Image 1 (cartoon, rainbow, N blue to C red):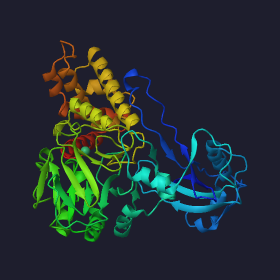
Image 2: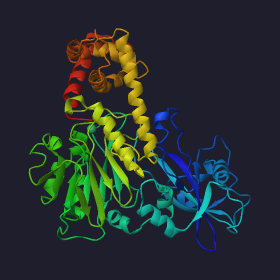
Image 3: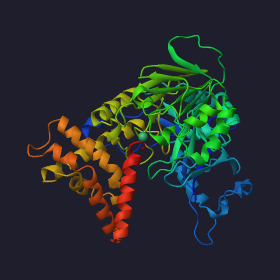
Image 4: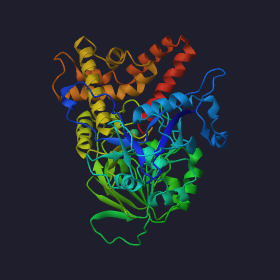
Length: 516
Ligand SMILES: [Zn+2]
């Protein structure tokens, strides 16, 4: 069951300029330490949720061409009146239109999850004139200006959002090659960066890993500039789809230019599951990975050309340039990728589309590194964060500060639990994660271990707290107590159930060595 959003393309007949609204940022964090991190202004088409009407109610607004949507959306059953009222209250105007609203475009969102997709209905309204009382948060924008703001983004400069790109300037040069190549359901934003959420064996609440596809407009035949670690005509980032979708991945790779670069942010299998398929389809492809990541990738997955990178390298994909950013924390070989012209940051698993990231204690995950990487990302003032699970984030600084605060708050609650006598992993987690469903305590246990290491590093642990005893409680002791508590909470305390949960916990622990 999808959700819907109404987006208004309000145009002026004389010069084709369209109306954009400065988007309201999320509420700032109250703490002083985050106040200096402010995202730049983001302008986009005015929009509002489009909700279903109850009973026999019908909207009064007439939208020409609504019948053309019937396969996807019966507009009569939706509250167009309220959505339009909200859209117009964001922008201006009393009776601004020349004629009626008409259907402009309908865009189905790919299934990023974890919630339902949000499909977008664009409707067009022509105003009588540009004169009128616009709200302070509105302005007219030309297509050319929008394109320039979308394609060349400087740090902390004004930004233009995805509805402008989807609704006003679709099919610009850099989009064309991917749309011709990719038959899977994808989303392109910013221009040139295509996200294909592919079903993967990933951690709940997500079910997909974003495969990132970049295809060059201007093909290059050989590397001329030695400042680039590699050059290619197409790029794939994190091919982590599960085996059921390997035929789709193979089909995509077969259509991409042969000079293919494959970049993996880290080694977890929901990011590398498709490597062997790519190599089989295109043995000329080059794999780029950090040494600590490459070590975990077996020859069965990738036996041919690998280039080890560590951060700071440049990659050229036709006219797209990327910079590799060393970004440890989630794992010790974790890398991010900056798309230079749009200042967009592909963040791997450092951030996810919803909720908080899990740090992998078994793969060198480390909180000190995680904080340092987060501040490194803040310094870049990215236009957008592109995680590998879930939707893109248009408020990067707010999101990154939210992650810092979340980890600090969690660390404080863990320290409180320890100061109040908790000595084992289970006791600490049952106090500091009391507000979280027990089923998530298992993945959270990795974060708690990392927090305790970080508290030890900062010499904040009480003198009577034994790290050795804590570490001894992290294996079967934790799994048994968690299994028992989980089953009790679900009211299924039977011998068979306990054995089943313990087996699940052990299987999870084994899986954890490679996943996340
Ligand atoms: Zn991961």
